[in-house]
Image (cartoon, rainbow, N blue to C red; front, side, top):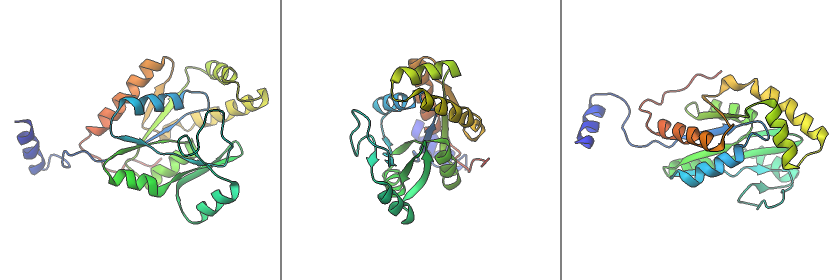
Length: 214
């Protein structure tokens, strides 16, 4: 009966066909907000969503694997790829360059899978201009104090670098109006529940007209 109702709704013009249309989910956050952990847990718990592996000029951190965490390339190689138009978006972040491979994203969307991009605010704005119906999600720390504490605890940066990251974080938070959803990552499990709820709701969306570009 459910399928029959759905077919009648489509015939009556109640919306687009109720088959799943692949979604492009874009996640941005200040450094230290827990974006990477949230994305990893989402991918482990939600089926049919593919993580886009970014290209970067920065050196690998301990435990990172080329091709799994990032595609690590030289500055010269990044520049060649950029000039060939291989990137859906690219940006400079803390002196290094990051980019999303257009062909990989388009391939996964064509295969019927949703795609998850974990990129900075500059890149999110570029993606929104190219994919008007992309879903933009911003991860917030509970406070600036908590963010600083997390940055210190992870032990990856000097105090000077942490201050620079906090300054950039304030600028990124000021761009929050670009995004469709905000998740405050105070309690990881609660934040993950919100994240999954957004994905489920967007997959059930009937209309998918262009969103307003701010």
